[in-house]
Image (cartoon, rainbow, N blue to C red):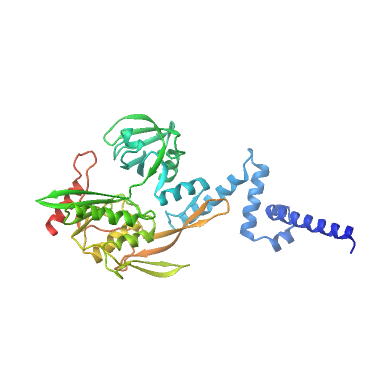
Length: 393
C-alpha cells in the first residue's frame, strides 16, 4: 500500500473515531436505528436531555454544571425512594473539605455545628480558635454568612460557606441561645487542627473521676483517646466518663480501634451487612488499658460509629449509659471516586451492635436519663454522669 493510501486510511479512522466520540456525547444526532443499537437507554436519555438543555435553555449552562445537577438528582432520587438521609454527592471542593475533616485538619473558624431551623448551632467551640477569640459560645446559632441567611440549609452546605482558604475573611451573623440581637462578626479563617479527645479530672464525693471528651473518629483518633484516658489516670482518676455527646461518627475502623482501648482482644465491637461486601464481624485488636468503672454519656448528636462504640462498651466493658437517646443511624457509607474529582458518598450497608441489634431509627436508650439544659452554667448531664460513676465505682 502506498504512503498516500496509508495516510488517507489513518485520517479516515481518526475522523470516524472523532465522529463516534461526538455522537456518543450527542445521541440526539444519531438515527433511531443506530441510537437503539449503540446507546444505553438511561445513559442516552441523560445525554440527550443535557444536549437539549445546552441547545435550547434561555441561558447558557456550562456542561460541568449540568453534570453536577444530574449527579445531585440521582442521589436525591435514592434519598427519597429509599428514605436514605446519608447518601450525598460531593463536588470536588466539598470532597476536599470532607477529606480534610477526616484527616483531622481543615481551614475555617473552629466550630462543630448541627443544623437547626435558623441556621447552625455551635455544639463545640475549639479552644484558641478564631471562633473562640470572637466570643462565640456553645449553643450560639449562626444565622447568616456574608450577609445571606442560611436558615433551612443542610449543615454540609451551610458549613461549606463558613470554611475557606487560610487567611481569608468571613462575616457571620450570630445569635445567643438565650435570644437577643444578631451580632455581625468578621472572622479570619485559620488552619484548625481538631483536638479529638480531651481529659479533665473532677472530684465527686471525695473520689477523683476522669471526664474524657471524645469528638470524632478521624484518622488516628484512637491514639488520642488512649492518651486522654491515660492522662486522666495519671492524675488519679479512678473511673472514666466517656463523653460522646455531639460525636457524629466517622471512620468505622477508628471506632473498632477506639473500642480496643477498653475491650479485651477478640471481643465483638460491631458487625456489618452489605449487599456488595457481605457480612463482616469486627473485633477488638488487643492491648487494652486496665479496666476501670466507666460511664458513657450520649445525646441526640451521638451517631453512627459513636453509637457502635457506646453499645460495645455497654456490652463488653459493663459501662453504664447516661444521657438522652442517641441519633439512631444504623447504616454506613463508602466514598466512591468520580472522574471530575468529586465523589459519591453512598450508603452501602447496615451495622449491628454486639447484641445483633440495628439501631437505625431507634438509637440507644440510656440506662439513666439526663439532659443538659441550654443556657444554664452547670452541665447537668455531665454532673449526673459523674454521680452515677461515683456510685458504681
